[in-house]
Length: 496
Ligand code: NAD
Image 1 (spheres, rainbow, N blue to C red):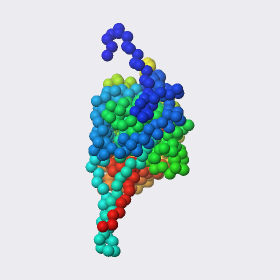
Image 2 (image 1 turned 90 degrees about the vertical axis):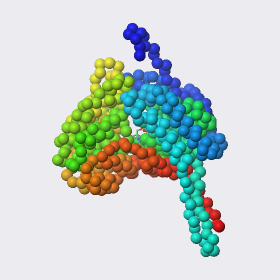
Image 3 (image 1 turned 180 degrees about the vertical axis):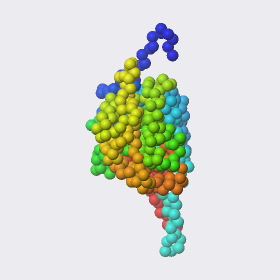
């Protein structure tokens, strides 16, 4: 901390280069890195052109068919655990890199983003080290039989295209299982958040990961590094987290090559609160669910259905949850809600604030922009916002906003609640609150989503299947499901 009167040194501008074949690479074209808490430019990332993407894919192919892909499981998992150690050793650097890109409160990144970045490597190293094989004994007419067993082999080169909301956590959620299975990867981080991927490249190098096994290309999506990468003929599979319409564009890019794809896409997640719920637990948990990371969590419930007898108490509770949040700079210990990621995203969320009012919402909390009277006014803050009075069919209740918002609607019966929750083009996640065990099981089984939490939210066990139904995704990752996507099974039949 600077002493009084001492001039604070300007932090060095961030310079995030691409990482190809074990070396950092510069390019002529740059994109700005902007601090979302002030709107100020704080650095730049080097945009990968076609030549850089080509080199990254070709380096990955060499590693996949050479030093990395042919490494035994024991050595491969040892190196991946060293990557986890490396993230932890440089914890503070990762923390500051993530915070400067996203503006999220320090405590959030310290408790969630960075630890999960390291955990992903350990979980998938353990999983691959301990996996068994499927074996079947098959009868044959001569009575001697046959043995069938399946071996797992890597796909080759996996392209990993990432979003900005949980940059390190969601990137490593894909990188770790892909590499654990013996694939080489080319990562395209979001243009908003290039920093932790660049730092991870240093960690990979220091851990002794062979050159070419992990590559990073920065840039935009359509017409830039993202599109060049996913459509590249040297890429064997694409895994993507981001908006549904981007997933559809990627699917079109890869259609002719019939590459395997895994998509984790958008959501419009319901919460269902029954009258027998413990509101003392439900309200704070759903306050966190709606507003954590400034609502920029794919699993956040933006629509909440509440049984009529507790509707009034629940609305009052959510208003209090929204109003107790303190917006501010990520490093201010009092801050409990940071900014949105960008000026464009702030505009999108504020447009939904206007639309909600046009569609007849009562604004119970928020609905505007906080004022600070200092440089934070240049940042991308909006108020956590609670609406009531909207029709279930309103656009605000159907479209993903991806901001700190929730719309609360009453219901009268369990059947009605399930029908309303399911009436959505999306099917990512739901959260159900009830003290009735049977109802909890029944409602969870009836909801058309990839994950339902009962009396909790965001409790994740990385061994469990994760993904979305309907427009929320394609395929499942997590535990053995990740191994399923990132490898090919070949069956071998031996006549005895
Ligand atoms: P986005 O789709 O705008 O961008 C994601 C990535 O795709 C970026 O790296 C971008 O550069 C790249 N991209 C864009 N167009 C491309 C193209 N044509 N070809 C190749 N790459 C392209 O998403 P975002 O705004 O970064 O993230 C927010 C979205 O992500 C929300 O919809 C959210 O729900 C979703 N999300 C889903 C999950 C999940 O697990 N289902 C998790 C986090 C975020």
